[in-house]
Image 1 (cartoon, helix red, strand yellow):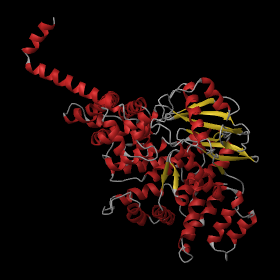
Image 2: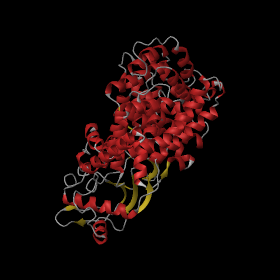
Image 3: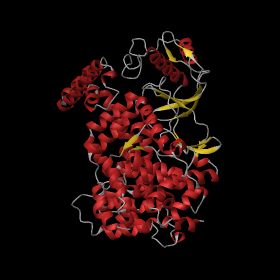
Image 4: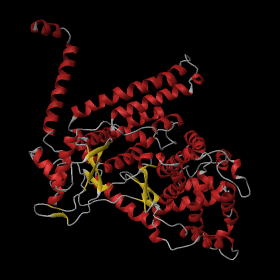
Length: 602
């Protein structure tokens, strides 16, 4: 049999050469993969995104990379091929009229793309989520479907999660969480599974009153609920001298997620040009590899370290507490508010200050972080009792939506850091001191807005409030990076003016004459962003997404809700504070329309 096969192969030298080459390549790849297995994943730093370290690690593992590439091709390939045939090849051959491709067909392909990204796992889900806030890169049809991406996945075994939790608690108790951990998140020991079940249980029960209970699962980890012991000593140290018996949320990272995400990031980096071409199938403009992929990779990588999320949460708890906590506001009665408004001798700036200090109560809270238990793989925070804002009563929604609007604008125009994952599950309503309070959750992904961008946005708001659309489009849009500096905006001005005027009420106009909400206007803007050479800053898209989320929740309980009216008080306050005493009179007539809005709404 073998002799016949050898004789047959000998008569076909090209076949023999091909088979020999393939066998040699496979053998070399297997040899390389085996040698690379001796290099631990800890060679990739967890504290920061290092593309060269990731490339060095995964380039030595060609079989693993090839297997993942094959999986990606199987999921994305059919969708791309379907699009090329329907919307590119057949129309160019004259076999199909391009105009006959309906919105329904485009939506079908977008749904398939969403399914493919979901099947490929956390990294590609997050790629889709990042594209969903880039209307300049993605068509409105695809944009809508990508916004529906959800990172909920089936939970991994609770036994595995409890082992991870016990390992991390022991590392934290020993004070060596950052020095003895393996790069894959496991203890850097030849016996990673050396903990017995009894040791796992005893470690966990030395911190919590009972074994944690699973409540939610996501792509990077899953969340458990537990209750802390009042105090607990460790063998040689005390993690906490005295801990109140608080209920806590414990986020535990998936044990294999670090390896999976770094492999995907390596492929995105290595095959960046190919990725750009794939993206261009569904986008109007080809995304710039270094800018988009590197920006995404850095954010996704930072999410893998829960200590980064803990730092973000502590920061926002402090900054939002200063701005939304009643202890930081001086008292001001309703009479002060009206007197400041009606007194012709009182400056408009003082009126806004009176408005700002008249709001009492803790209106926004961020759960506290138990840093003594938090590591790169576990995050322990205060448990928030309540329900999502979207599921709350109409009265609570009516009370808290204006707070939520101010919350998003405050991050954009004042704080300079922005919650980059606004969705219904991250906005909760809890009762504090008998009053409904808005709770902001999940700080794994944060966007930064530098001071120059904040100033530029404030100036843009001033020009918007003044109705100075020419300056807004010709100057502010370019300064913020929406448009190229040398672009002629003559054609664009009338288009944007029409859209923007539909969302604003000029002084003396009737509020009820305008029936278009933010999302309707946003869809029109997205179409313009896609058709013209716009580059939408991520922070702007996130603000629009956050405000759109709040508007959708509000409209479900109050069909007459006006997101623009709700945004005006804080936006105008920031605008007035930015102006000098000499300048703010320039827009006082437009600002006075706020009182008109209130009287019309009532």
